[in-house]
Image (cartoon, rainbow, N blue to C red; front, side, top):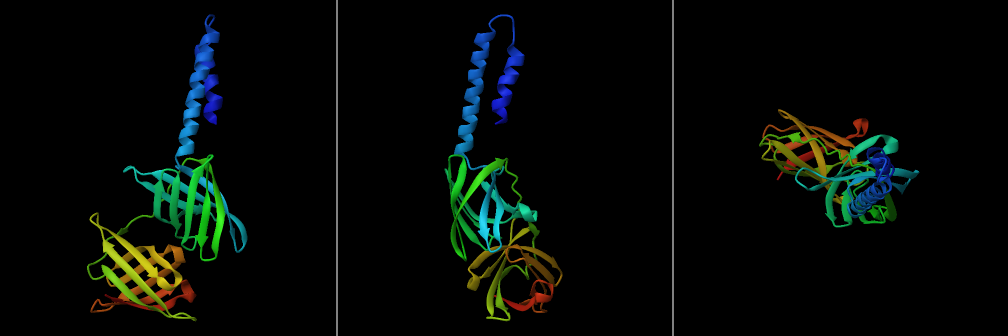
Length: 253
């Protein structure tokens, strides 16, 4: 839009002369129009950008944002946000961009899956979550500002691996699995599964200080604080929100 306003004005100032003004003006207006059309065509065929749409939730409608871009390896990356709550950098998982098709899981939106298609300058499709499916349409409002979570430092060999256990709740007990896998760059890839809630592969931020282990589960808005046993085969602690935290004992597989 800014190009459409700026190009003719710049060309008029640069090429205004006593002779040949009309020919040059027409020529460069044509160039400006061609550049504008090429820009619009590019915008319509690429899903990159900052997008905003409206969802229907339990408390009524609310706006969600989606940022899509390619990183320096030409890989697609994304994050989401809820502008009214000043929430940014919400996790996107299983992102697949193929042509005008965009599919991913919105981890912090109750693991909802979005299936979108770019058309007429908009990203439209469906969001499917625990409560069912609903249509959603995103409008592009600017350039992408993808915010990816910071990587956690590598954990000890005692903690690295797969852990499983039971979380006691006021209702049914929940099976939980946590996976820690150190990476070549001295960071750790950590995820958590709660099969009964169809929550699989939720990213986890980890902090280990000796026997003390903490990890945050952004999708569940919960924090675990626990301690490794002397034999390093059990990890016991509390998972949840402060006074609502519940006892969990994980055993190494």
